[in-house]
Image 1 (cartoon, each protein chain N blue to C red):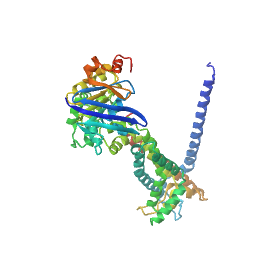
Image 2: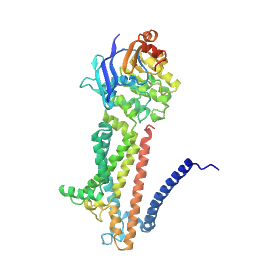
Image 3: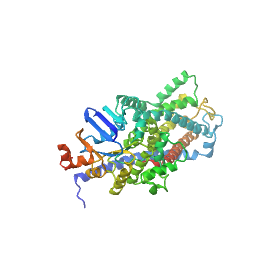
Length: 251
Length: 286
């Protein structure tokens, strides 16, 4: 099995605080990799290092390499916008863009000049269907996206990310702000999508990780403690701290 | 009856102070408006807003102040547009391109605050020097440039305060899709913050259209309606100023009428821009 993303000796500091220390991680192709760990262990920072989102954090300093298909995304001269097209991000809380539902999905296509045609409707329908939102919005594509419920907005965010045909989807606790039914919707979609995409999922919920993950990375205080196939890590953790976390005594 | 505790008393005093300040401000504003209307309304004839001054005399007892109305609109719209051309990039730069708390940003903000405090007569004098250096005479163009200087610090600082409240996560949603900063600025940040940005423009416009001192030397005054950027241009604040300093009651009345027109003009432009921005911001994220 190929590793789609490889992280080599990654150190992240924000100001003078070390957030991630010497992380080495392999993220396999076409699977769901769950990053687990208690709050403040650096899960989100790790995720944000993978699409160069840390560039947006003031005073952040990244050392080491993040290899996407073997190429370091932190190498000089890399086009960050292209990295972010290839690696989509589904945030914790959905933030629709201040435009119509239709334009939200068209946004990425327009800025990346993927499709310049006037009538994007068939394409937009395709991605809204992939995200399981089409039926609910087909009659009001030109309404403001902010009129949607928060669960619908999260699916809209998924659709607009998918429209860029990314290879990897980073999901940062994508269900934590949603009601149970919307959360289930998103989980189902992630299940379907892993056929085609590499998915990296940060989650707080162990049960969600058990349901979705094929591969697990467990972090604690900025260090990677253990990683491996989900079944092995969940059923037979090698490290004491992983055991403690899985049993609920830390976290 | 409720027992009057210390906390209730505090609340009552605070409320009282709030109502008092409100009454004071609303009262004096009402007084000003009342004075303008009482003295200006009788002189506010159809001729006032459709004709230029007549009667041979510079300040005219007959005819109207159409020269000043149009002059003021040209000056303030031009000055606001010119200021906008620089304010939007500066405020976007301050908020999206350089680190928010950098020394550079601090310096720019302090300079703008100082510029805000400079009396407009100084801008007028500065504009006059600039005008001479550029070989211009008192003209619409010189007035517009000077007004742009007067309006710029207000517009930038007001926009800066608006853009500071831009939700970071919304901005990041755009970056996450691989947008560049300028794409994010123009397609996400500006539409999202449009109502606030329009208010910033209106603040500057209000200051510009009401300012007399800066256009005194630079735009001049004339009975004629300007037909080119190089023509001298009348303005309402100066019409008020000149007419009010005349010893004739008929002329003074016309000053109040001109002031009333100025007030109505600002009100109209303000309503219009709010209406437009409300229509354009139906997509903004709450």
